[in-house]
Structures are given as structure tokens and as C-alpha cells.
Length: 105
Image 1 (cartoon, helix red, strand yellow):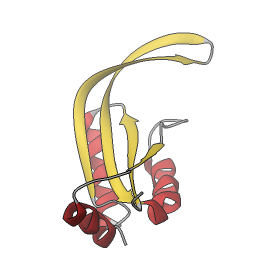
Image 2 (cartoon, one colour):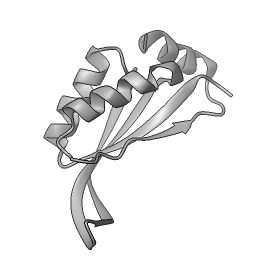
Image 3 (cartoon, helix red, strand yellow):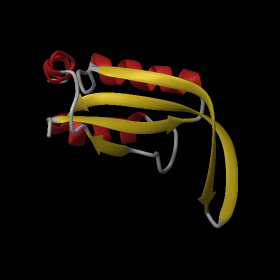
Image 4 (cartoon, rainbow, N blue to C red):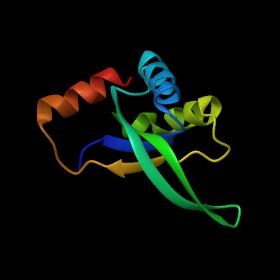
């Protein structure tokens, strides 16, 4: 098991995703943020089934930075209840994993 997590976050659009991703990397809360534009989400919200276009952020960070990352996302995100899901990385290319750990300090 490594000390790296991948965090999934959806945003209402690419502009919001870029702003959030840039700030997380600038603050060294994330080593890298990938944006996948134009996904479609189907979800239940406030008793209704909704469908929305969104942008998915794939955030790579050190697990020790997750609490601070989550606080920053909650403070900067436009949604009332943003998706913030951390997935542990069980294996990976060692130099890349080291780079993540060194970059998210």
C-alpha cells in the first residue's frame, strides 16, 4: 500500500474545475489534477432524480494531505455538497508515486 490517494471531485463546468485544480496545486495540496470535461451525472438530490453536465477532477495527492485538501475543496467549491471521494492507491510506478509525495507537501 502506498501513501498516495486519488480523489474524485465533480464541478459544474471546466472553468470551475480549472480554478479549483490550479488552487489545489498552487497550495501544494495536490501534485496533479486532471480535468475530464463534459461528463453527465445522474443523481438523487433533495428528493428528485437530476441529470447535469459536469467536469470530473482526478486529483493525485499524498494521503497525509487529504484532510487539508478536503477543507480547501469545501471552501472553494461552488456546490453545497461537493463530491469528494478518496481512493487509496495500492500500487503504481515508484518514481511517479515518489513525485506525488514530494509535490504534495
